[in-house]
Image 1: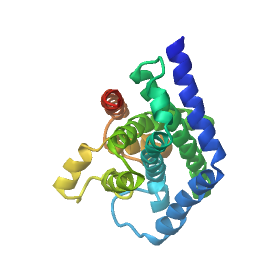
Image 2: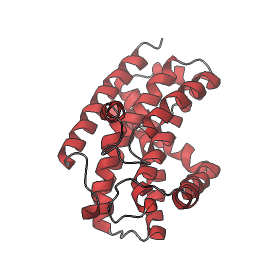
Image 3: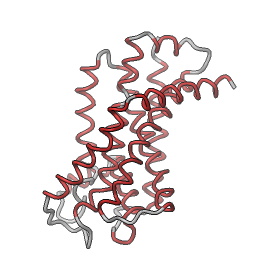
Image 4: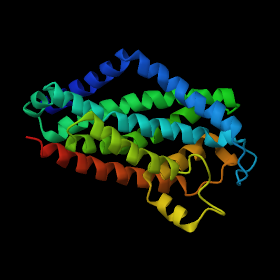
Length: 252
């Protein structure tokens, strides 16, 4: 019970911090909207996307982008907690380091998923058919995406000593993951072989492909079967949670 109480407390703390930050909630709505309206309208893509408009094509990718950027940003909470001494209090609490990591990871993942849900309902503006069944099918995929990405952010932040250092590393990791995920263009056809190979090692590629399969339905020709996308995401999450726990365990 002590472990569960500790996990719940850390989860609840991260949720309250997020809900009190109204500026972040508002920006989570407008930033993806700008991508969809300005970039989606101004770009004239000549690749093979079937009968989809470019805005419809990038819509699942923008959801993935929101989950990625938000998840990685959450690593800053570790640095803030260290600066104010809260992390030291957490680490000396009578719960395991795994529970500490899991509580923060679940809280930050919940925050990221909330922002992803906000973007999800922007699809109505693009003429994408949204229904409760589609949402319930897409939600577990969004959760799986955030678990691994938040774990990356928390792991990196555990080694960083300043916000500036984390910001540089975060940008260095975010952009390749985003652009290699197929969020903005299909990873098939005339795309260079090296780019296709690199995208195959990118976990977000499988997350975006799974979201497109659910959201776009028959209009989208998936890169991989849905079960394979989910399997890769689950394996990625498990590996990153183990690495994250080990990273937190080294903290004294």
